[in-house]
Length: 276
Image (cartoon, rainbow, N blue to C red; front, side, top):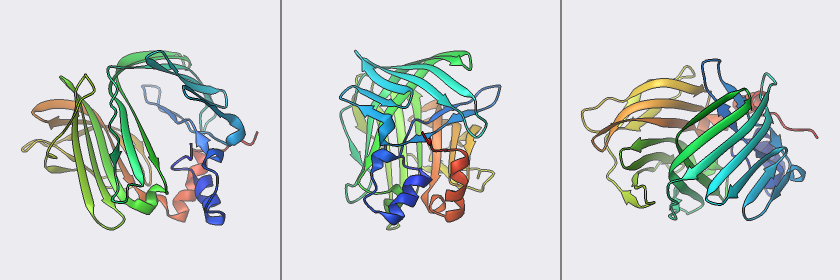
């Protein structure tokens, strides 16, 4: 809701700073497999949105807490090549964390790792596939566009033998850098750690800078780049954290690039807007 990377929302705010964020909502689904990636992020307006304390419906898709699990019913169409994307994802938290973190100095951007440790089950009808394994659930919200507060950031999450680790490295718009290294226990507990040393990663095809953190003397490896765009990259990372060799998800985001008009003009090809 108030889709962070929506070009339509960005264009609307230029004409009206108070543009309604609920007119710019999307469910982003990304699949990566042997048959190639499938991507859906169709944006819809307020009339397609319904929500209450436990349920959020957007178009034909629906997210709902059912007891102790989050059930996501997906009914979308991929872009830029239109194909149906339909099925169910169920996320079963091992424990829920109740701590919310401020990412900026003015407390205008918040991050809540709701379920840092979780089990995920995927059952898709179109395309026909299923999967289960470790997962993660978080949420970000803010009182202003991300680009107003940050120049870029790097984020990663990895499963540990007894919990999970999350790393955040941000460069704020003021030029100030901030780092967070957290260890989450399977009981939902959180422990603030000293961030490991910074480690550079190869640039992407779009020459986007990537960086992470790893134990002293260990060089992290990019095992697969899943998304490689002008302002954003998502990768599978092998690294060493807190004495363990781990695989994790990693992302790098350049908000300086995101705000460029040429990049905004590219986004509708991957993020169409529903007209009805």
